[in-house]
Length: 89
Image (tube, rainbow, N blue to C red; front, side, top):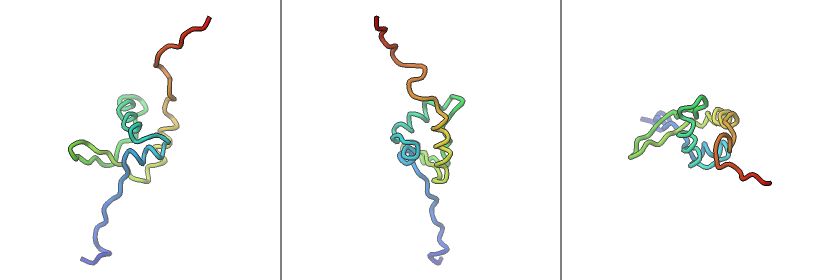
Protein backbone atom coordinates (compact mmCIF):
# COMPACT_ATOMS: atom_id res chain seq x y z
CA UNK A 1 0.00 0.00 0.00
CA UNK A 2 1.39 3.38 -0.97
CA UNK A 3 2.19 5.81 1.82
CA UNK A 4 -0.46 8.32 0.65
CA UNK A 5 -3.11 5.56 0.75
CA UNK A 6 -2.41 4.51 4.31
CA UNK A 7 -5.15 5.24 6.79
CA UNK A 8 -4.24 8.10 9.08
CA UNK A 9 -5.34 7.85 12.70
CA UNK A 10 -8.07 10.18 13.92
CA UNK A 11 -6.72 12.80 16.32
CA UNK A 12 -8.56 13.49 19.56
CA UNK A 13 -7.71 15.79 22.45
CA UNK A 14 -7.89 15.02 26.15
CA UNK A 15 -8.95 16.89 29.25
CA UNK A 16 -5.77 18.98 29.42
CA UNK A 17 -6.48 20.49 25.99
CA UNK A 18 -10.17 20.95 26.79
CA UNK A 19 -9.03 22.77 29.93
CA UNK A 20 -6.90 25.10 27.80
CA UNK A 21 -9.95 25.85 25.64
CA UNK A 22 -11.99 26.96 28.66
CA UNK A 23 -9.24 28.40 30.86
CA UNK A 24 -8.99 25.72 33.55
CA UNK A 25 -6.80 22.70 34.30
CA UNK A 26 -7.42 19.24 32.95
CA UNK A 27 -8.18 18.13 36.51
CA UNK A 28 -10.95 20.74 36.68
CA UNK A 29 -12.44 19.34 33.47
CA UNK A 30 -12.56 15.91 35.15
CA UNK A 31 -14.33 17.44 38.15
CA UNK A 32 -16.79 19.30 35.91
CA UNK A 33 -17.63 16.10 34.02
CA UNK A 34 -18.67 14.46 37.29
CA UNK A 35 -20.26 17.53 38.91
CA UNK A 36 -22.46 18.44 35.93
CA UNK A 37 -23.21 14.89 34.69
CA UNK A 38 -26.73 14.65 36.14
CA UNK A 39 -27.72 18.28 35.67
CA UNK A 40 -29.52 20.20 32.96
CA UNK A 41 -26.11 21.51 31.82
CA UNK A 42 -23.88 18.42 31.36
CA UNK A 43 -20.46 18.66 29.73
CA UNK A 44 -20.19 17.76 26.06
CA UNK A 45 -19.96 13.99 25.67
CA UNK A 46 -16.63 12.62 24.44
CA UNK A 47 -16.26 11.39 20.88
CA UNK A 48 -14.16 8.44 22.00
CA UNK A 49 -13.34 6.61 25.22
CA UNK A 50 -10.15 4.58 25.45
CA UNK A 51 -10.15 1.88 28.10
CA UNK A 52 -6.58 1.64 29.30
CA UNK A 53 -7.01 0.40 32.85
CA UNK A 54 -9.29 3.41 33.28
CA UNK A 55 -11.52 5.28 30.87
CA UNK A 56 -9.78 8.11 29.04
CA UNK A 57 -12.19 10.42 27.17
CA UNK A 58 -11.27 12.23 23.97
CA UNK A 59 -12.90 14.95 21.87
CA UNK A 60 -12.42 16.03 18.30
CA UNK A 61 -10.40 19.27 18.04
CA UNK A 62 -13.27 20.81 16.07
CA UNK A 63 -15.41 20.80 19.24
CA UNK A 64 -13.51 23.61 20.98
CA UNK A 65 -16.39 26.03 20.33
CA UNK A 66 -18.90 23.63 21.86
CA UNK A 67 -16.83 23.44 25.04
CA UNK A 68 -16.39 27.20 25.14
CA UNK A 69 -20.15 27.70 24.82
CA UNK A 70 -20.72 25.14 27.58
CA UNK A 71 -18.26 26.92 29.89
CA UNK A 72 -19.84 30.32 29.19
CA UNK A 73 -23.23 28.94 30.22
CA UNK A 74 -22.25 27.14 33.39
CA UNK A 75 -23.14 28.47 36.81
CA UNK A 76 -20.34 30.59 38.25
CA UNK A 77 -18.21 29.60 41.22
CA UNK A 78 -19.63 30.04 44.69
CA UNK A 79 -23.27 29.66 43.76
CA UNK A 80 -25.34 27.60 46.15
CA UNK A 81 -22.72 26.37 48.52
CA UNK A 82 -19.78 26.96 50.74
CA UNK A 83 -19.38 28.05 54.28
CA UNK A 84 -21.64 30.95 55.33
CA UNK A 85 -19.82 34.23 55.94
CA UNK A 86 -19.58 35.53 59.47
CA UNK A 87 -21.87 38.44 60.16
CA UNK A 88 -20.07 41.61 61.26
CA UNK A 89 -21.71 43.71 63.88
